[in-house]
Image 1 (cartoon, chains in turn blue, purple):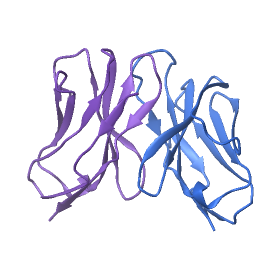
Image 2 (tube, one colour):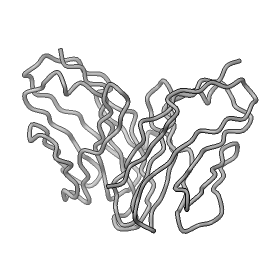
Image 3 (cartoon, chains in turn blue, cyan):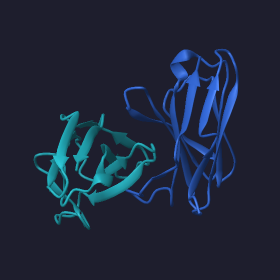
Image 4 (cartoon, chains in turn blue, brown):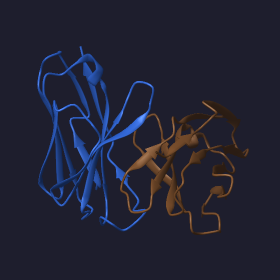
Length: 115
Length: 114
């Protein structure tokens, strides 16, 4: 069973479109994240949610809107896609907020290409 | 702000040999956690090993071990008996105590040759 699953795994779309990436975790974790890995493989956090509440927003453009319908799901919606949004987006989760040093478990990534 | 530096962009090693991947970090905090993640060609981010800063003993996980030098702010990963399946990008990461944010280094590409 996949612990953190994302869909779609691959997405090619045109500039200006709106797209969503879905994420679900079956680990019973309270905190979920979105990380972005750019073309140089650099990974950086975008958002984190704890039990549906936004905790971290790393100055991401407001074209990116995360939505957490429940603590097992964290979706990422991107409006007006730009070429620079091309990247691999990783969903992740961890166990309990506030317990220092919780291990973060990653999904397989969603490879977004904007043309 | 914390930073993580992986100065070697790429390394190669022969199968069955031992290789050490270097990582340094910068922080003024005393409570933090360090991680190594592996990203094979499949792109999945896989946790390799984790170290708590308050622990003096170096973490080990089977063929993987770390050399944690707190004063030097160094956190190297040693892979013993390298296997072809160890071929991947390796990322060193830092998490401040009380935070949920992982700060990653730029990664290092390791190739294990037969």
